[in-house]
Amino acid sequence: MTRRGLDIQLTRLRKSAKNLQSDVDIFERDFSRLSGDLKSHFERLIRLLETKHAERVALIQGRVDGLDELFKELEHHARGAVEEARREDARMISALESQVARLEKQVETRVVVESQEEGLEKAKTLAIFDSIIFAITNWSTEGDTAPDFELMCQSVLFPIVYERVMSGDNDYVVTEVPTSAMEVVKRGREQVKHLREACASSLVDPEAWNTHANSVQQWWTRDALPLIYGGRSEEWDEDTPLSLVEVIEWRDQPASRALHFPLIFDGMELVNKHRDQIRDITGLPDFNRNTLQTRLQP
Image 1 (tube, rainbow, N blue to C red):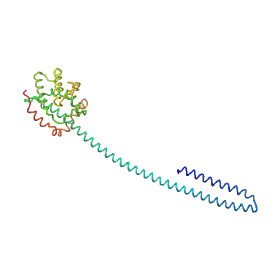
Image 2 (image 1 turned 30 degrees about the vertical axis):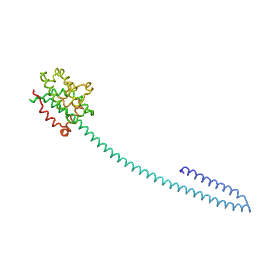
Image 3 (image 1 turned 90 degrees about the vertical axis):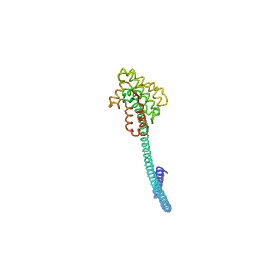
Image 4 (image 1 turned 45 degrees about the vertical axis):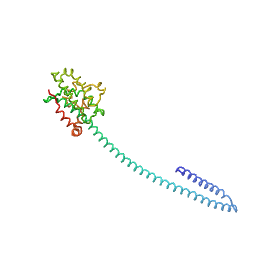
């Protein structure tokens, strides 16, 4: 029974007792007008009624007190149950928070590990391509170099390979020096030797760039990259190489690299960060030694 129900019942009992008292008062007023034996008879009746009334009032009061005690006991148990439920909820919440914290820490640790592994894979790829370009441009037995040809290589490799790798395209990741890399270096050096014979000026001269850059870029997309990746992608035909202005900016303005070439800049930072690991696990030391023995006569 609810507290409201108990209050309603108590109110009814008290009203009943009040009505009974009112009836007794009326009776006593009328009784005062009687006399003789009739009055004596009614006096006995009145005492009997008073006794009954007192018993009824005592019974009602006893029920009221009992209901109050019962309600207080129920209320006490209810408060205890609520407090125990709150404590249990607090214990469960605390346990769940601890579990969530442990899981979050595990996830954060895993993300860091995965991020480091992913960064290493990207760095290995860029380092391998850097080494291939370096070997090509250090092409002759006389120690001749071709930094202008290097810019032509970067003009096509930066958007096709480097940016895709740094954007998370795993199809372009190369974790070890491919066996075809030596053949790519050989053919690249032949390209350099041919251009040195065909062009008297530097390849970064605007006229020379306009004349020869496209052939070098197509050599990469149609010959060198298919050798490295084992196949050719049609999307390479849609890619736009960097312009002469852009590669000159990359070469001459290092401070602007992070702003104008953010993916390439981040890639070079990864290469520097993982340089020791890259050297140990990609096969680059052996590759670099072998390329020294296959330079061309100028």
